[in-house]
Image (tube, rainbow, N blue to C red):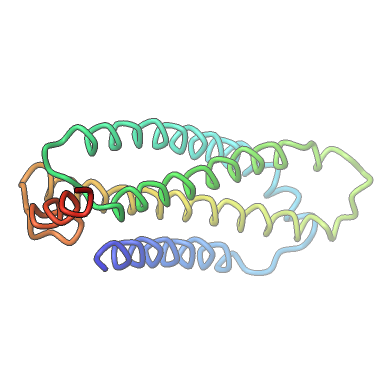
Length: 183
């Protein structure tokens, strides 16, 4: 089915972006615990801003999905159940990205660099974990945006351009079959 290909392409785009993000952090090379502590202190405000931005974008996308549903249901073209399942899949993934970004924001706001209770060698782990978390939630948002883009393209093709031969468009013969079953 066409939506599976769209989802696969969106996930592939997210994986490619995650690889690029993680390769960028690997290019920094191995750092010591003290260097990691300094880098955490310097990058924390940027990571917090990133988490806030992703949370805001995710919440906005959830609100925009309501508009997608409204347009889908109000159109004279009928969309198959798979379209709505695709929108549901976007909503679920977007909610997961939203939750992950808020939790990451909360965890990364702990004043970990201010305490002496944390051994210096732990800062390496904390630094690389913060880079990984940032990369994962960023890639998750990229997947959501690509899936939303694919859904919009489908809606434009079916609703706007009235492509009745689209795999997600219900044709008149399908409606007639449903009417015959209901009689």
